[in-house]
Image 1 (spheres, rainbow, N blue to C red):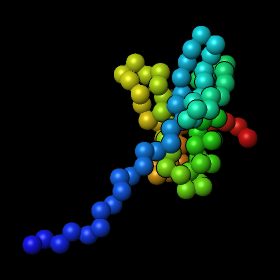
Image 2 (image 1 turned 90 degrees about the vertical axis):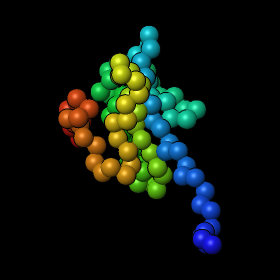
Image 3 (image 1 turned 45 degrees about the horizontal axis):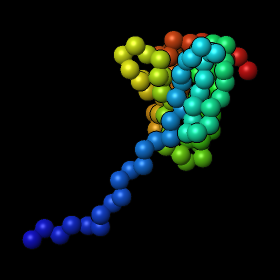
Image 4 (image 1 turned 45 degrees about the vertical axis):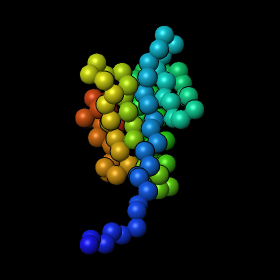
Length: 96
């Protein structure tokens, strides 16, 4: 007889910061919160990444998802993947 350990609860889905676009501009949706409109994809994406990284630093499982890609939703960053790759997302980093 095989002895099984305690049953683990399924991993929670990561919190998503979803980048979308409508007739008013770019928006970021995080749960029921909507931020924007932003004038550019770059501005919306940078704010989404800033907020997602802050949530990740607090221990949350987080991802930034671009919902405007022609091929469907594209995950641009996950809290367990390290620093955000600006080049992969096709944008220049924000100057602080």
